[in-house]
Amino acid sequence: MPRTQRKEPARVVEFDRDDDAYLTWLAMYPDGYVANVRRKLSPDYVVLHRAGCRRVSRSDSPGELTGQRYRKLCGSRQDIAAAPKRCGRNAGAFTAYYKICKP
Image (cartoon, rainbow, N blue to C red; front, side, top):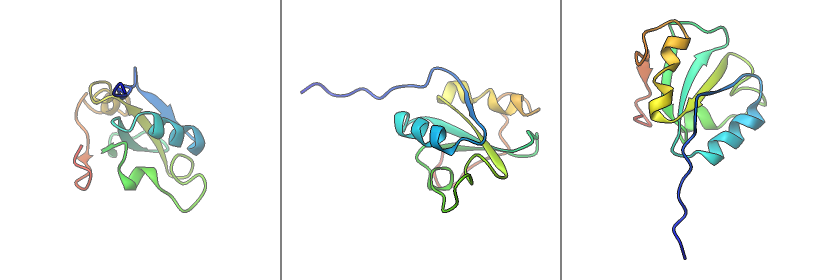
């Protein structure tokens, strides 16, 4: 049986108030990356996670992942490097790399 190749996301995708689409993206791209950012984009908070990280992939409240305080910028490791610049920081300059999932 041929080995299934994992898909690489083609660009940065933003999820804002759409947990269902975000969770679908996570399932499609388990090797992708997620920049967790504030609802109102801010250079003070751009945290990088792996797509499978529990911190950005599980919630007890509907809308909590992309609808209350945060939105998500998702993509390949190469593409997600542009996320900080989109939030007003230098490209590649995340405010933190989540220490549990070690992106």
